[in-house]
Length: 122
Image (cartoon, rainbow, N blue to C red; front, side, top):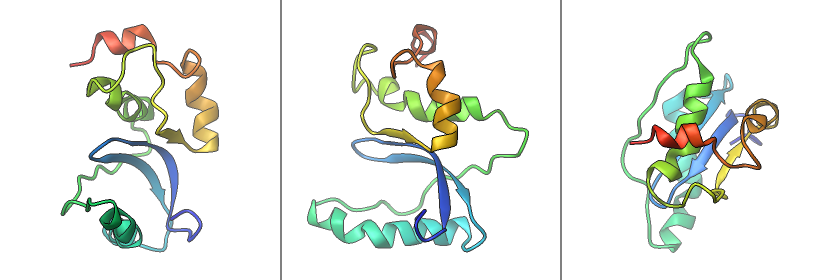
């Protein structure tokens, strides 16, 4: 999607049964058409693995002054919230763009969440 100039990834986490993406759209497609393209491009690979995309998706449009840290934390902490790994382990399927990585990763301790972040998880 980035190679085609559809969007620029800010951060993402791949979970066993879903993904969370924070992307910045380019001017080529609407969000709905961009998601449809992602699903179309990856559908055959998923089908070969015996899975498929669910219908629909949830979207939230961030405003320029909206606190992006809260969104990054929500995405980053998702596998911990789901109980997929203990606090001392790093989820290998979290990624963020280069500029965002330079901003967000120094908040982590060797890739691990701060204990205070985990203390407030549901």
